Image 1 (cartoon, rainbow over the protein chains, first blue to last red):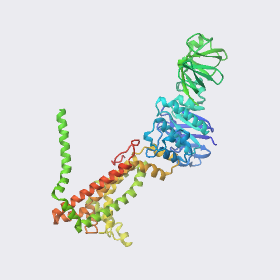
Image 2 (cartoon, each protein chain N blue to C red):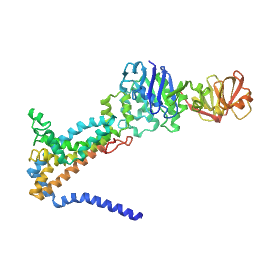
Image 3 (cartoon, rainbow over the protein chains, first blue to last red):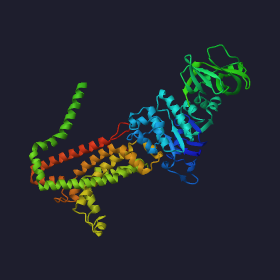
Image 4 (cartoon, one colour):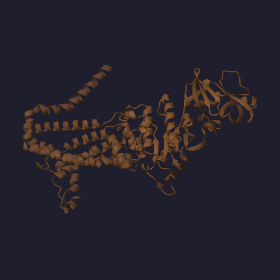
Length: 340
Length: 274
């Protein structure tokens, strides 16, 4: 299996999208950023629906190379593109929609839509449409998966379920994948790396946890709002007990069972020298890993969890890298997202 | 005020429909079913009906075959001067049919533009059924062409993009996605054009003449009959109305069957945007 390599410039009204990126097989890169930042343009350029003014796109073969005048037409690039509104053909049944891309070989069964084979898209729910679109993209036997705002068209309560399914599909495909989203939760749960795009330029590319801990600027900080902590959830005494990879235990008020991602906003995490006897259920003690000042606030990382405190508090507590401290947050401030 | 306005709207609607339908109804009052049947037995009428059906079907099929792919190309591409091209398509709509007839003579007539080369090739169009077909096609083409462009323009571009990324080349995108999704719009444009072609008079009489059994279509026969026997002309006109209704209903039904649920937006055969 081949990775995706691109280095392109695509003009937009008022600015150009300039992006250079390598995505290895099995690697999932999320491009996040405000709408109109040029994220979807990147996907369209890779798929061959839009032509860059210069650069190169390779995935096994060369799909585009401005210096060698190579521009493979969209229908001859093996791309699995999931459109934001799914773009299912309204005149074809589910089975025929999927078969449009290629042989369906058990895809309908695997994605749990076999019972919908003879139904037309107009009668499907949002989550079902998403699965049909995914099956159709996979039937194409693509070399790369491109997902455009995969959960934007869904209501909040199907979103978590669809996100989990997408995560499973992405990791089992083993393909290089690009996910475009303005939703940091999508990015944090689906992607191995997250790139922040603003007005066509890549501001920062890092693991989600690192983006939260050390955003390069305010914009990235706002976008990468939350800590993402992965673990396994079990219901316990009306709460959810989550065991993290390092054996630590965390409690959340949201329901959850199985593999989950916990989301905690840095401003909901407090920092102290000792475990306080307060209402917070979750305490993480350890040496301070990093301290990043941001205006009148400071981002402090302890055991992978980022807290945001005021400069005044940081000075009063004499926080220093390497010094022992406790990060605390309440179970009610902990969101639970089912993940894969 | 509210009641007054309601009354004005109701009165206007009544006048509009009355004005449209009264003359049509008058045709059927002036004649009788027995007359219609007798008229069908009349040689002139039968010949004219056959010539009309033959020439307009032939012209219509040619127009649809040529204009459908052309409309697809014009609807999907943006290029310099596209607005001008679209406006040119509508030019024959604003020409009087007599002008169209003269224009066709100037093009295909003996000793004229293309006529010379046709003559050299041993082809003589004047006063043949081929001339009727040309006249009908020329006059009805803009109706279908612009309706087809509008139907293709109304398609959701994302569906066509999706088809391309799924490996469909240009012809498969057209045949499997474009055509079926635009079917309703194409159907109504087609009905409109066919009806216009059947009623064609001016261009035909100038370019093809009015020879019974060869170039005399139903409208031409009605005109010829009108000078000889008004009752017969009325009966033929009533036949024409029935024919028109039958064609409209058939095509509306056809396009209704191929119209799909509401997930895609359809536009009726309107004017294409420029």
